[in-house]
Image 1 (cartoon, rainbow, N blue to C red):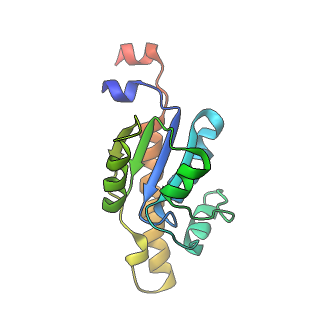
Image 2: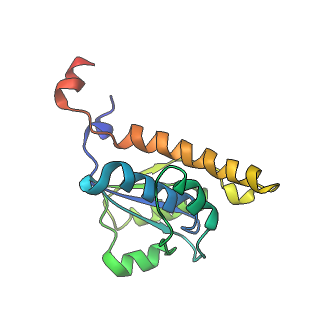
Length: 157
């Protein structure tokens, strides 16, 4: 097990291009599975509008994001600051912005390349499947990365 993963993450920021699809999905999933044990927020590099497809596909697994309002990194910084243990970037543009933040913020940065489902065209069900694919991948990755492993269990591995 890597040393970085052994340390419990107490706060995480998910960043994507516009905080409309990938990062709010990751924020909602983290909040759903970890509750208040991990402080979580999301932001985008650029301003955007809410995306109705994420409301539908997260509702399928019992998560309500209908009140999510996209915000930029700049807005989040002004609102509460950027004091996070871990910043997870989900797009190339967001990763560049996250690395820039580390000049002034002491946070670990991880890049999780995540497909942009808004680029998928076709029938509504095909588009929803693209969003579901991203959702399911984020659920798996978030649960794996943020799970708390006890010290006794680590010693057995």
